[in-house]
Amino acid sequence: MVRAVRGAIQVESDDRESILAGTTELVSAVMERNRLTTDDVISVFFTATPDLTAEFPALAARKLGFHDVPLLCAAEIDVPGALPRVVRLMAHINTERSRQDIEHVYLRGAVALRVDIAQ
Image (cartoon, rainbow, N blue to C red; front, side, top):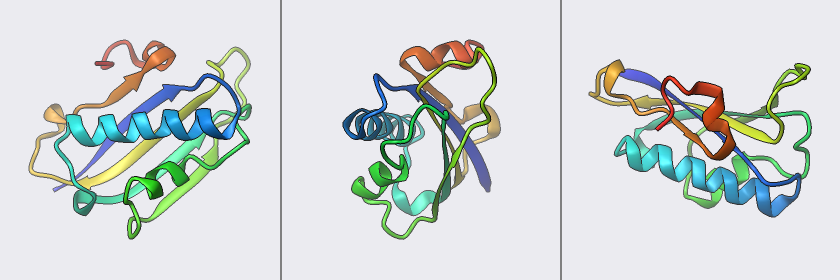
């Protein structure tokens, strides 16, 4: 079955190291909590709030071994009052897990985005 898993993390600042470290933490947590390998991942769509421009979040996934997984980055819409410095992802995965068993991951300040499902 194909499922989607969501996640987000608020990073410390708009610098390359913060974006890569935060994205690495997020991708690693999604993979661990859902017991995934890169072979299970079909594609990953990353977004970043407009205040994050120092690096592409997908680079962190490449450094984690996502060499043959299609990755895409885009900017979130600039909504007034939105949480700043957030990297989000939506990964499409092959899994036998039910939709209810997928663990969506919201870390650091991004927990506020989905209090209903943040872990």
